[in-house]
Length: 227
Image 1 (cartoon, rainbow, N blue to C red):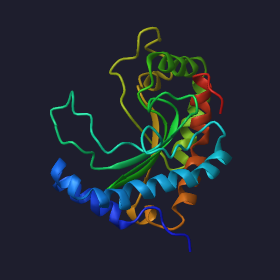
Image 2: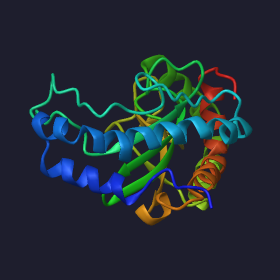
Image 3: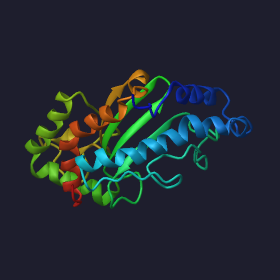
Image 4: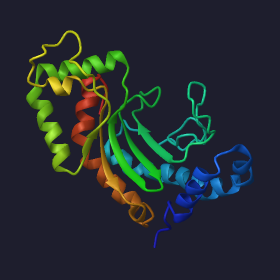
């Protein structure tokens, strides 16, 4: 049987980190972080390169320790009132090969005690990309509607922020007004810790990614990227 990438030890470490979120505790438990969280997820990322390539040759699995598909554990506290130094969750994003940062089309995996989910889409796109997506929706709202309905039928829920009013330049009575107010175009599917810790989780996650292809194709096309 294939050895699981994700184990209960990952969730236990993150649970403990939630309670003891300081540098002294983390340094004393850094070996646990490496063996239960970082190294298994880097192995997952490296091994996921093959199934990811069958979904889209433009999406990248980058197993580098820093700057790759694995999110860093350290929080950016410069502009936050919460000065806790560490994230209490682990995450992986498989981004487009042309991506400069997380604000690009990609597949996402979130691992947190009590909150495990897979995601797809584009989160907080820059102004140019956001306008391109909105323009495509405005030009052909029916095409977007078909993609949106497919995602819902396949067990995804749309998440993210929206403007209170329709953005400037679009008709307030447009049939897709609610869609044009979106600031994020992301979907998630809830998973469980038990599923994440299963030996076949990589196959399950690949299946979720394949289910989200209509959205990913739509968004990459809208922003002028190859799928």
